[in-house]
Image 1 (cartoon, rainbow, N blue to C red):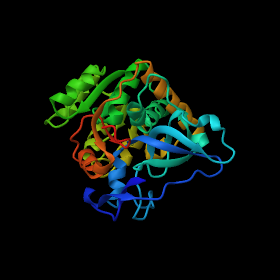
Image 2 (cartoon, rainbow, N blue to C red; image 1 turned 180 degrees about the horizontal axis):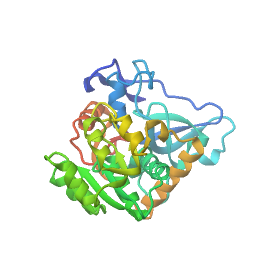
Image 3 (tube, one colour; image 1 turned 45 degrees about the vertical axis):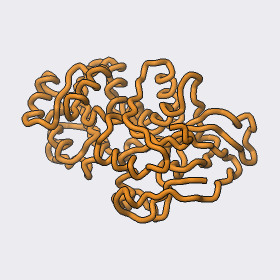
Length: 324
């Protein structure tokens, strides 16, 4: 089978298309014929050799974790009725034509939902839904979303709005601001222009009960003062290179509850529930997935360049099926 493999830590150029032996499902596992593979920013950071304490992979390896596809075969102890079913799952090494997964990790794709859209929700749909649960977003909250035009940011805007919250979306440039407005943001702020913090404060009516920081770095740190006393701040994003360096004294003095990336490590039962919820909302037309770019498997290098360069609005997805 074809796969995109990281040959060594480095830039996108270390990704190469290779031929590997087809995986075989073991007991309790299925073989998935992959249709599409999700991409997320952290995969580019792992490829570059960052966060090795958290992601102890050693090249050569096949990156990626989220897939959509069709069950092609089952291992011992698995109901043969799974064969032919459209599913999504988290796997080890999704940038490949085939992958194995425990049957317990499978979530059926609802009728009427295409596999490309389903793949785009494997990571971000789960994380966005779970994040709003963890931060207890309610109709009484004003919510600031940093990185609102990204794959997960676009979902956070919609899901927070669906919970009845007042949503202010922060992004860069007119096109991205227009998109998040279309998705339901009550107000927008361009973080690429001077004075954005004060404009955000004005749009929020003084501050936010919940700040969802999908950017990190100094931009995320600049948003901490926008959090009201006793508010909640989620520092889950680091596409800037680091998570937001928050002032611990200010956090403690003002009674702000801080959530980090560790708070988004959900148990398998929650992952299954949150995935099914996101797929059902998308199938019903209540949740729109924004896919900004699709690349064939052989162009995984270009996909990583697009992710790192923030060239696409929304998700970047790999088309593994060859249908592109």
